[in-house]
Image (cartoon, rainbow, N blue to C red; front, side):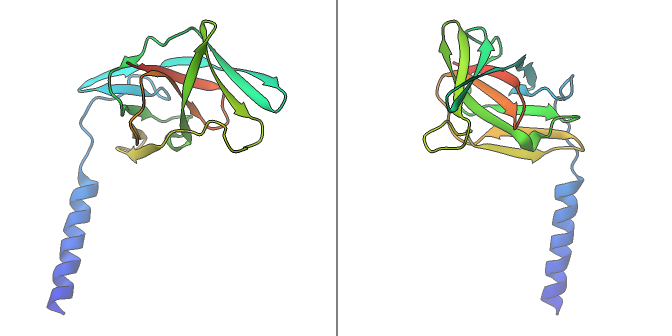
Length: 160
């Protein structure tokens, strides 16, 4: 019985400490924009709308410009987002190709094998509506776009 009481006390204290800590790091100045984390600095991602073009059984989403001004040297970037209208859990990450001076990603209209799949992300709640979004795998140099599932809004960045 005494061991059970100690265990319960330990769990209670541990959970209080874990949930009682308040996030004290930098905060994004604008809601619903993912910011790249570089130490204590936050760099906004490039916010654009991807234009869909349907061809046969595919949709190509095009983004103006050959490269994003938001750049990071990190192969596993970390983002902070203050969610208001966009759910951090709905974000998906895609590598985009540069063709003809613009960025694009082509997807099957129906999910078939072989189409691009979103890269793995991990989302952690830091505060009431503040989230940390981490890329869960090393990604290659190139252009990338975060996008809420089902939206044409894209948040672009480059890994160099």
